[in-house]
Length: 236
Length: 107
Image (cartoon, rainbow over all chains, first blue to last red; front, side, top):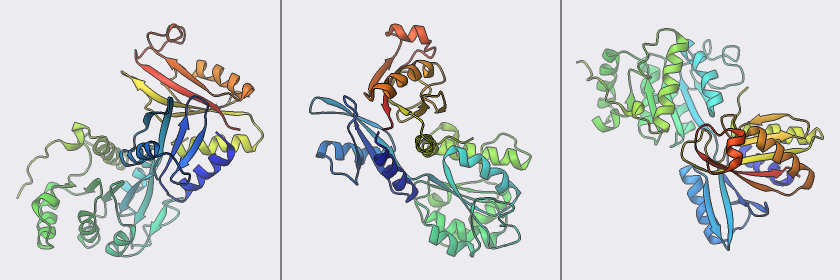
């Protein structure tokens, strides 16, 4: 790889632009798509690679080509700058998540408690609308306060977020479902919310709850059975 | 230390900026069970620094040897490791899978 191409690849990553690194394996010739022009079959493979976030191998004009997608990082939006959020952040980062913490309560969302993390102090509906969750975004609400959690969930349910989780007991969640139903969300949409949040590992401490949440997010992302297992019915 | 794809590239770029000879190895194809998927990277220097991985640790030594040749010659290589390859026994691809690795110099 030429240093110049690596610099362009890094610039694209810094700008959160999806790019595919296209390599002819026979001699190491490389280009970056869509910045560089490429023959149609390679463009097609580059598109697929980025869409599916999966590398592709292509034979083109008698040579093997490797198409290596470089998508922007997955995003994790945590609503609630609480103790569990402090435990969750350092677990999510090495798993490739760019983490944002949303909490209008400035006493909680401080740089001391969340060093190096993007903190947003706006009200949660405005914050979430601006963040615009997409299919590479996970959202988890941890404030336990309907005034803060509900607006964030409302925006998330209208988005393509691949994971939506909400902290709270089954009883709390049943009340939450009732409120969100009044806001116009149907049963199918509400079934997207993982609550009680996290894989059932009998988590007790903040770190254990953080672990159960991030494990559930990975399970959903990878399509594991654990991530979609049937939940116990919600108690009335 | 976290080692996402972005971090490994940044590490490789920093090594080169510091005047090191750098090679990148990338998993391009796998068959059967193998611990690291296509796209996984290992960055190496001629002085022996390593970042990232292309396997669970079983082929990194052989990849590093090939990378030294590539750093010297500038010519990229495609390496095949698998149970049908004699070299697999040598380096012990215990998982029983096959993996193809592309090695290039950061020039």
